[in-house]
Image (tube, rainbow, N blue to C red; front, top):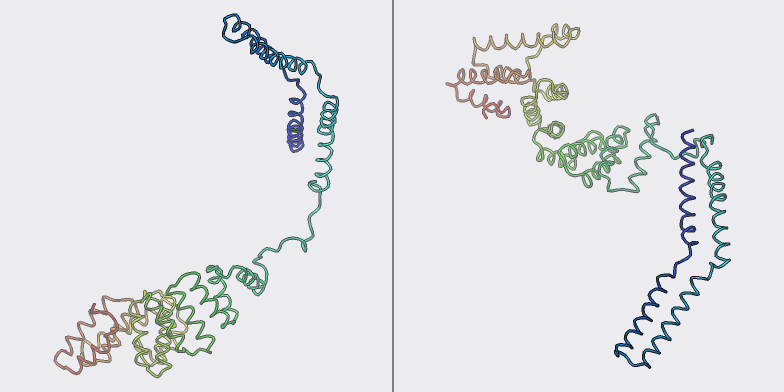
Length: 367
């Protein structure tokens, strides 16, 4: 009911807008003011003649002109509005009062009725749907980027999805466009390098390595780029360089870094164990332990190693394992203390001291 009331008010306003100028046009214009002015002018001429201000011939000519204007004004006041104008105004008023509501009702009932059924789904505008297959969503984003190729945010969204789908060459192109149109960053460079590695079957090519180096130059703490730089060194046969890169990552990383297991595994494959090797029996037992118990067992072995080194401080490799183990476990203070103990233990042996310093130079404990 309220909706129909609003529609009635809108219709009345429209009709009023049509009839108001018609009503104003039908009013006769008053000529009384003009007649008074002309009469005053005639009286003014008589006064000027009496005062000798103008000659009789000039006064007579002025009287003739003013009298003509006075008669014209009087005729205009007496003439009624033309019959054709009255008829036109009446016809227009009838059309406004009757035709306008009928025309509006006809359009509303055919196009705007609340009882009108929905359009079939096929005729509706397609909209992205999270329930659609991933390939369909990718196609929609690609279609958008064809129309707006400078949308850096769109390329940033599309690139990781293409990599997830295994379309690595397209992912490389998308990452490059995200950098071009969305701005350079260490994360985007690292992602681009990773996509190039995936497209190359896991080989860190020179092109990928260059991207990782750019990422590290932008942000030395970029973990993904550092990991792949270590992998590049390992693939080039430089296992010691790879181990140094990965040890430095572990030394600077928080204990709960999500990539820590990956780097530890890579370090083990490179032959640079970061923590004391577990006996075979301990490895079997550790498989059935939870994370807390495993960490406790490892810490116990590290402490036993520390105790052994206090008895025999000549074992440079043991000191190296101990310091790295503390770094991996996140005990940086203990790592510094162990380093100080190690240097004191081998201070009288220049060769052992050199080997110790060489093995720990990438841990950043002296800074």
